[in-house]
Image 1 (cartoon, rainbow, N blue to C red):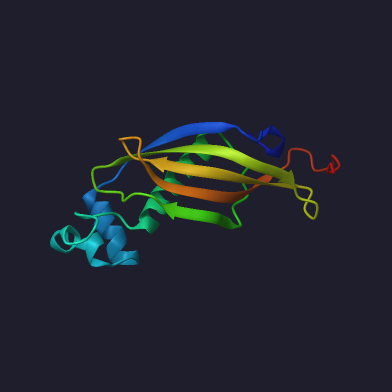
Image 2: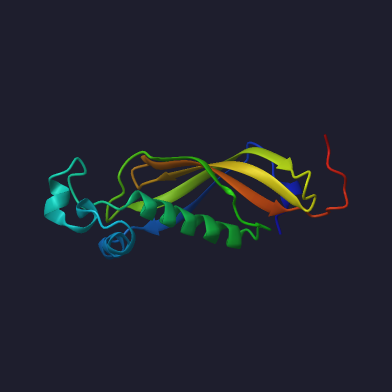
Length: 154
């Protein structure tokens, strides 16, 4: 199990392989982001997207699916997230794309008010099959401390 004490600022990981399907793009958009360029080929062709594209929120959901799969594979003692500091949809995601992620731990600290918890920031980049950046995010996460009885360092 990976705990706070195991995290190192600067650590990078690459993982994921998510195939984006037309059916999933339309299903997600129909339920959560029903804009024409996510649902209709002709409407999408008339926009700067040029064709049907996934919702940015769907791109986030696909990224999250890869992150959770990676956390489960690597058995991380994750405790959730209080949110994100930055989120950018850099390029459109299209049906037929295959996505992958790269992460880098950019900050880590032990909680003073909750000594059983560590907090860390990760830069998360999602790329398509052409190695083009499609999503860039700075995420905050909480993780269990292996031994909460060890004093918090200043």
